[in-house]
Length: 157
Image (cartoon, rainbow, N blue to C red; front, side, top):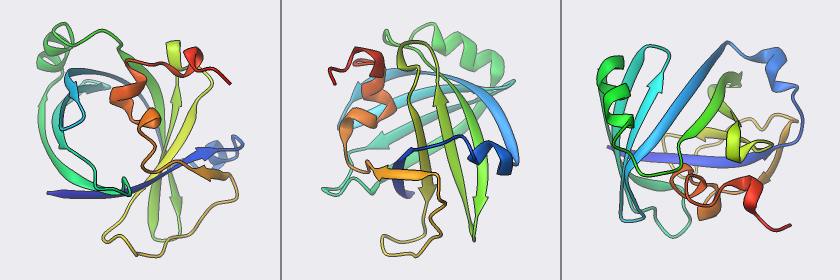
């Protein structure tokens, strides 16, 4: 399956007023190599394992394979992950025909808030809420796999 998404910084917390869901997420990486990342995620009591390929030059498109696993399996696999666990709260926020996933990061990435929207094609139109800021699609610093290695709180301004 091919994933097409755009990623943005968030400028205010107005999105919380429109959120239709809120979930705590813990994720780690069994492999964080840019050519192939293998992520384990625990969201509530459910788990997933995801394999992602290298992004295209714009950073909008890449191969993604995901499989549901039990929460117990996810917890066990998280123990095997590379250093740098990601902890975040995800809000799902409708905007036009799309749902934005807004991630509020915690721990070593505290202060970072990113919104992502998945699209059916690279050129698909979408509504841009007022709380969307600078687009960071394709900037590898904002990939979760990289945030696990180089956390936001360690970046030099």
